[in-house]
Length: 64
Picture 1 (cartoon, rainbow, N blue to C red):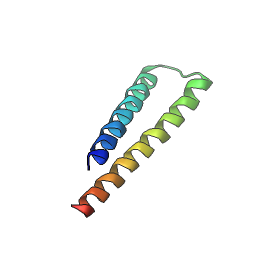
Picture 2: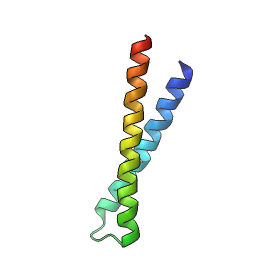
Picture 3: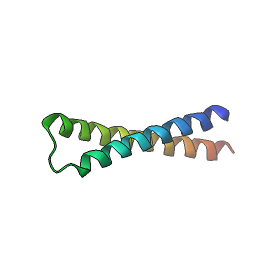
Picture 4: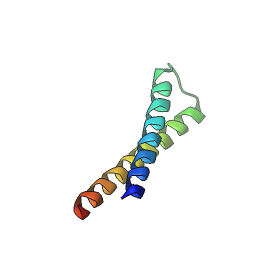
């Protein structure tokens, strides 16, 4: 169970980092081509982290 908690904490931290960077990009009036690509990648990574957190929560509640 400790592994699940530490993995949840890691995923939450990643999700938060992606969200912070996306906020920084959103604050810019214009994005370069590289920043646009980064934005798309960050959105996908953020969603993937959220999906993994949800899956871990469901797995943990099924075991409990």
